[in-house]
Image (cartoon, rainbow over all chains, first blue to last red; front, side):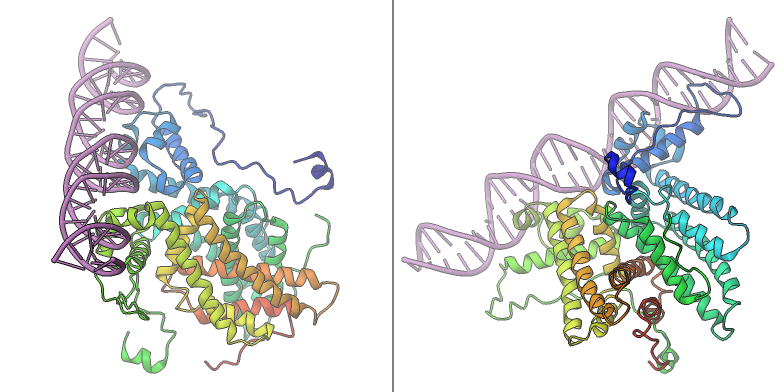
Length: 241
Length: 241
DNA sequence: GGGATTAATGGACGCTCGTCCATTAACTAT
DNA sequence: ATAGTTAATGGACGAGCGTCCATTAATCCC
């Protein structure tokens, strides 16, 4: 990325591709534990190594050996702390699921109770670098893929969907009341389904072409879709930022 | 599915889940070959067995042993005809890619040259049972997943996207000329991106909840999105059908 | 400080992976 | 018929898989 790109404020999709996490220190914060034995930290390290490995080489090639090598722990740790590879994967799926709607919740709370602001908060969260990046799109894609033959992972992949759906639906329901009563239910339902599907599609698109993806364009298209259903809301932002 | 469902003509999303293909006879059609040695047929059988296995147990558990067992051929066949497991997977990815836009092309040709009809043909094709079903959504999802670390498979996953994009873009460009000239490019670009993303999202949604998915609702939402961008086209269909 | 408890190690285990090739079977051409 | 060619077989191979546990190390409690 040249200095010109910075000055011109280009789409700037040349974010460095991070597949690994920056390696946080043990930091047992509250109660001091500068110990060599720290089961909680060991679990975190293993989950992170698992996710990094999936993002980097794909779930098919993610083996116990690769995980422990990256985590820098011994072979027995997975069996000791999780009971086996399968349960480690499940724990990792749970982790990313919680991580996801933790960030969404955080953004929503800043949106007060205004339904339109809530919807936009969800969209901005979902399309943000924090949630939608090479690492996490690959991880989510992988987990969704094995969810079909792994019930315990399906739980976490579905939980995210369901929570998001209810959240959005509630906001659209409130909004729909300000419009034609006849179409009330249909309007809210269509908006919910359409928005969710669009966001899901955005993730797939990002996964396939991360360098060509523009968060600004994505946001404006989603907004345009919603403006079609709720003409008195979600109008295009002025050109500035 | 009860007799009432038939009579009432319900959404009928209770299609039997077919993960395997119905096993077509060798049928060397043109030139008679009722032979025990038939390399072309052997390849087809192996590709089909590969895809069926991926759809049924996931790509992670798709091994050479599982494939040859399903195909009913001997261990050496994969190496003999494809050179290895990796190249068999690539051939399978190519196969589904061609199968996809073969069906899309077929539908488009019935749409004459009317751009609106072309768009609707693509949508109907993409959302049809022929293309969007449990088997193929799982297969596409799997291939997209490994495309990140397998360049030769990425080719076929990207080819579909690119072809579809150009097809849709051309139709929308034509349509956009009938509207405000200033917004011409933006309108066509937004419609293209939005439609593609929606269709991709629909596949993910179908993959995750095949039994709750309604093709009718999906179609109407996509139409609604497009009507928002092209107000003089894509208006809601009358309630019939 | 010493015994009990719990975390962590790392190698051995049986098993399955994908590859490869000597062998056999089927078909073709002479 | 026979020799030559090509398709198909199936077992052997080494590598790598995930699991498990006897052993060692760290920490806690009295």
